[in-house]
Amino acid sequence: VFEKSCAGCHSGGGNIIRRDATLQLGDLEKYGVADTQALYTVIYGGRGSMPGFGLDCAPKGACTFGPRLADEEIKALAEFVLSSAQSGW
Image (cartoon, rainbow, N blue to C red):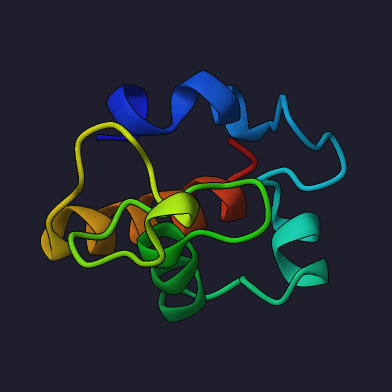
């Protein structure tokens, strides 16, 4: 799911849009999203220039124009991102 939905902007834990807001553990901690619930919330509803991927994401302008993700996929993504960040990608 990460490769399909996230790697275009976050390959290797980076961020091609905002280089100071990567998925590296230090940046996750800096922005207050270094736990699975916080990551779930961001992935679901979006944040800043990152679109949300949740099925009921709103408003529509804040959400992806591509396929939406099921809750289980978002939970798995949050766990994957945190685990990858903790291990240094």
